[in-house]
Amino acid sequence: MTTISSAPAASSNGSANGFLGHETVYVDEFCDGILDPNKPFLGPVRDGGHIIANTAPGCWGPMITPELKGGHEVTKPVAVAGAKVGDAIVIRIKDISITSMATASGNDAWVEGRFMGDPYVAKYDSENDVLNPETYVDGIGEDAIKYKSNGKPATPFVFTNGYTIAFNNNRSVGVTLDKNGAEKLAKDAKYYAAMPEKSVQHSVLTMAPHHLVGMVGRLRPFMGQLGTCPSIPMPDSHNAGDFGSFLVGAPHPQAITPEELAHRTDGHMDCDSVRAGSILVCPVKVDGGGVYLGDMHALQGDGEIAGHTADVSGTVTLQVHLIKGLELDGPLLFPVEEDLPFLAKPLSDAERAQAEAVAQEWGVAVEETMPVSVIGTGPDLNSATENGLQRAADLLDTTVPEIMNRATITGAIEIARAPGVIHVSFRAPTAKLKEKGLLPFAQDQYGA
Image (cartoon, rainbow, N blue to C red):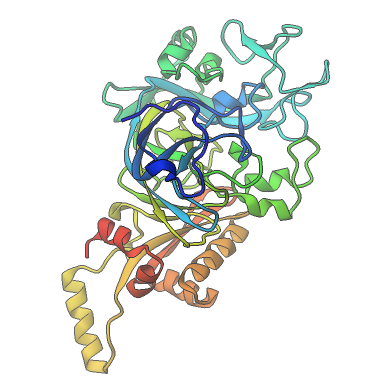
């Protein structure tokens, strides 16, 4: 196994001089908040190889670190050998482990005068007219993040209702702390956050929120960000149809046009089914693909309705495979069976026998199907649903009305994140999944 830190992306076929890519690529480097396809990727990892990463917390830490040009701090993308535009990369999530001992989070409010249009991607020192100014930590609490230029408070976000949550040793539960506990953690924030050495973010534990005390949460980690690099430079947190829409016509340098939003790959899903044991299939919109990850969540209810959840450091092991010519607009997912909606679960032997009896009586054949979930995103949940239905129809080479029926009878539409990420789950014909090169992965998840 080879450690790669800053190797360039693979050649067009990834096989110059017989080199097919590294078996394992270890990742401990992070973007500055921008996913940029013009910068060299790490790797390449071979088709069938592994990526092992130490990820940094997302959301609040990067949000209170003005130097970062995005709302997260994700890993540098890794090229997959042989991946070309119009292919797809299959990502098996082998393991997700929390390394943080504690974190903090909660609802946010924006501080006027400390951002230019969008506090996630354009933190702004209005007094000195500087975007993404340098800052430092002095003490604890909401005013501890300060501009290097003048020592004044710098964070563009404060809590409306926040909590600090400490975990047990095996990271199965967490309990929210009172003022004394929160402030103890705040004084050694990066230690308790298990902050990766190359991360530049300030830890949210520094702010010591403690509105909720004694609340217990069950931990089940998943990746809020996992996907492939967009085909234009884009803030990591805005690589999605909802947050990405905030960039359209924005007053800061990261603004895009409506047409440019199509370059996104929807790697920022906040879908709690993107967890260990699931299989994610991502579009390739730039040669090499550029697999990146971050924003590990310790737990989250559907919708992430508070706007944020418990973001943590952690380690992740992925295995990647290449499907040539599977042109996708956005991700699709084979969740672990437990996460599937009731109607989308594979038929049991008893259910199939009963269905065969009905079919025989009426002279029809039972359709062979497997579950699949298609991610949809947009400025709001209605537009995200329309996007997911259209992507599913394109996948099966059929119509949106057919997908509507399949999702109603054999599945469901679930909210991943408000304001605009959903997943359309349904049972799809195995013949079509086979045609698309997806059937082996569905069979790995749900049996033959």
